[in-house]
Length: 53
Image 1 (cartoon, rainbow, N blue to C red):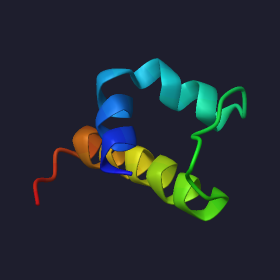
Image 2: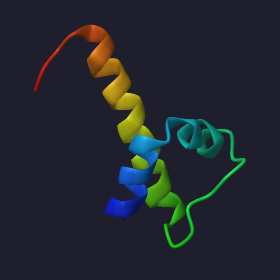
Image 3: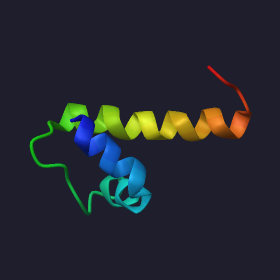
């Protein structure tokens, strides 16, 4: 799964396709895919708010 996350970090357009259900991650359950996509949403919110953790 870490390879999938690294790929998505390098190819943010794929995150959009996954959210629009125009692509899927093979070998990743629906729950895992949701968690991955949620983590990308959270990163965006943290960056826009200027908070650092």
